[in-house]
Length: 433
Image (cartoon, rainbow, N blue to C red):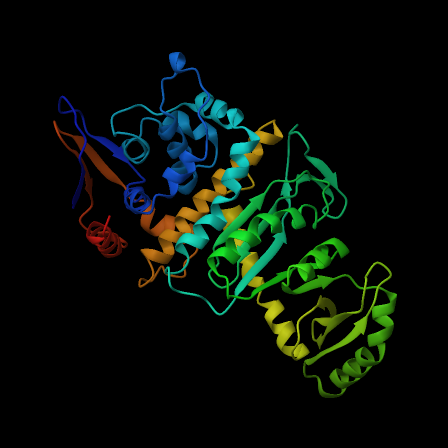
């Protein structure tokens, strides 16, 4: 099996080996989609052209494709800069790519304005590509969460967070609940509360979503740390229906004490799990009016679990609690971002450089998520994690030979992922450009 890439060369060279030939599929998809090109357009190259060796476009693509392939560390560039696959997906197939110092300078050279433009890429692409131009979903679900990013060096603003008991950054992450597509990420100092900058992010997310989906209702669900007067007030002012986890207190405990006691007695009598869903009205001192509090009581062999949520939604308490519990899927999406895309590899000294690095990892996740949705939709990898897709489809060994006009990738005739690889390659070749 051989794939060719139209690259000019003056002579036949000794064959080289690669272990990431599957990235050629992602490169072809990316060229049709234009995602990486959009990333490059959002970043201004301020370098002095007299001292430039590597094109800006090639450096950004090199870094993004390294992350997509599982090489999250900039140090990996010192050996991957000679890899023929990366030379093809990032540049012209002949040019030696940037080294670790070059990519480190790239990460430290990006201004805040460019980082903010990159942070808007997720929602911009969602509005443009998540649905067909004349397609309108029944609703949009904003899944909001924060996550801990432990730090182990002298990074700026890597501060101690008492709840997590560690020095860390505290990124804010937004997904769309129906599609699982990443909408926005923001790097925050380690001591920031969960809800810090949520209101500001809503000001970036809501306008483009409403322009694209003017008749579509927007819902939001988030963990307990997001339930602050400022966030609740913003959501209500914007007409957003929400369910937010909220911490317990003595008032809440007193309101449900009787229900908890009955549930526990019923479990002791039947030895069958007991689930109670109800709600009540409550007004905290910091609230301008009463709000509805949802109650979730579970008694099982694992013990007693009592949770509270605040909402402005109507409907049965059981249905709203089930809808809120569905946000568990967003936890898996965050795991993909952290474990498969390694977005917690924020080891630059400067906070701004780490903020840019988080955006690079977010774009890499977006690229592979759209690839999974559009290219792998009817395959066995349609619901696979990014890590599984990388292992079974992207990590492909091959021998690479350059001729005068072409660059040939010689792959094995048979391997477990060969039929899927071939099908994807043919589908991309047939796709309109």
